[in-house]
Image 1: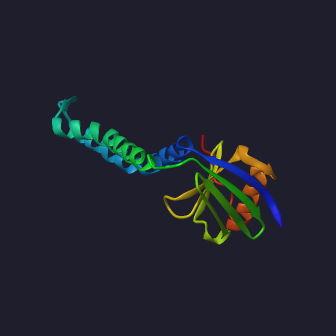
Image 2 (image 1 turned 180 degrees about the vertical axis):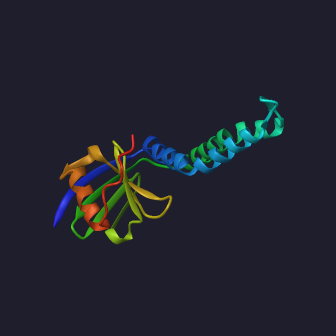
Image 3 (image 1 turned 60 degrees about the horizontal axis):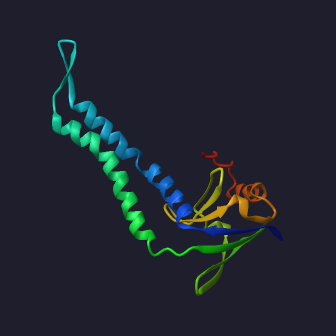
Length: 168
């Protein structure tokens, strides 16, 4: 039984938005290391804070921005070959039918909900994760029948868990 239909136009812009979300999710450990290095660069002597290690301070201040910029550059290089793609999703009670077209190619596939690693939603998109870093992007404005709420309810039933917290 069909629950909803969606047409999502994937562009470099919404792909970059997903990649930025992934950068932020993965960079928290680097940020903690950077803060620790900055803290270690100071010490308290006779009640006064004293700079003890300039290298720790410099490395700590540079490591997180360097990491984020490096990932962004790598994504930009990787995305140069990306062609805008239109994906059509049909959500049924058992699986998702997906057809995609870009320039001279057209592909169709189907996926059972059990093949999804996790689901996350933002204000604009639903991300259907295939593994830890790969996801199908579903534009919430692209529903031609049904709604994002119906799809999320179905996904929650399939995953047997509460809806993930909405991100901004």
